[in-house]
Image (cartoon, rainbow over all chains, first blue to last red; front, side):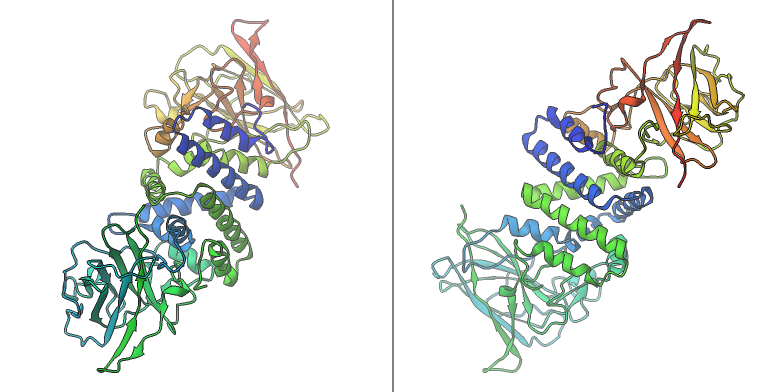
Length: 277
Length: 277
């Protein structure tokens, strides 16, 4: 190992992992070193470019505190979060796609009766969301709990905005024996991810915008089924085809239609849950 | 881009760089995304493993301040610093290899006459270092300046150790018209890189030690020649074959011999400088 040359450098580092007793860590680090070195060999960074990368990582670390996770933003904007989520949620045909959890879910949203509104700030609820939760054979799943949350018209979640009542635009609904659910809300709005830090600067430098299309978050749980973390997106949204964090899947894009029975519009979506292993 | 699947995720992210006007940044980020995704696809991290990586990067960032650069330590221990240095210092046969600069070089080491000692704390200098600085044709380079620095016997550089006089074991020597230099010192000692942070924990978890073999640093400059940053290592050192930061090259390993003219030992080394482009 005293003869580290361009030709031998990668295997010299990999060889150092021979004594690693944690087999998974050894596999991860071996793969990481090989791919990282392949990247360095491909781009041949100057010393100044290398230092720019060190500084970027340092600034990204310094931006992280108990309210801001800049490395997760980096992972999101490089598509890594979505790729990890896809790898961990391979699904059967017909079952619902997952989508990114995001940083705005909170514990303890109120349990509400079917048909209730999640709007708490006095705005008129003009969107009905309804559908069924079913298994792989299309049979209804009773007592499934849908935890839903979304932005207000100003693009902010309640936890970001002191002017919204607590738990505004959040609620939990439980399906009946027919697997059906329905609730009242308003249209969510697009919003930018936090972009005043190093990740925002990188987006700007690479000609990218920080916007996410409007979406309605769901975590759906039912005993005996795999937890489903997903979101619905909206046809016609200006960012539905350019989500900064790669969360959109075509099966999750809906088109609200006018309600026949009342003012406003409605979205119908049926969620298919995988049985737990 | 709304149809992000395992198959399409990588090219979806690369496609977002289409609007990047900085051609080099576009090339670097495209390569980085492809290699990073290839790594994720190979190891298929769980969500918990992904979060461990986020936390490791965050902790590494938080360890960085004006005195400590934990991301450089990470780069060093993953062999990236050495690989970048090798790529940037491809040399002609017979010219001297480069080695890592490290964090302990300081500006303003004293200019000393040839033959002087760099030991300032009263310890007897018992190692003579001498040789020639030459060009690719073996001709002497006059007025080359050798900036040298090393650890004290306790494994610390003067800047780390309030008990050492300032500029202890540092000095600059200028070659004469014959290209020759010589100075007096003591043997440097092995020392561990800072290992009380996340990078030290990673070394431990992967069965690696944090030690660097003893070495004598040099930056050699001469008008019309490429700056040479290098170091000499010592045959028989316990860590010469397992340097934590991959700095050792076999051409830089020397074996001190007993002095014929005085007590102590000597090292002779000739440095070959590349002509500047």
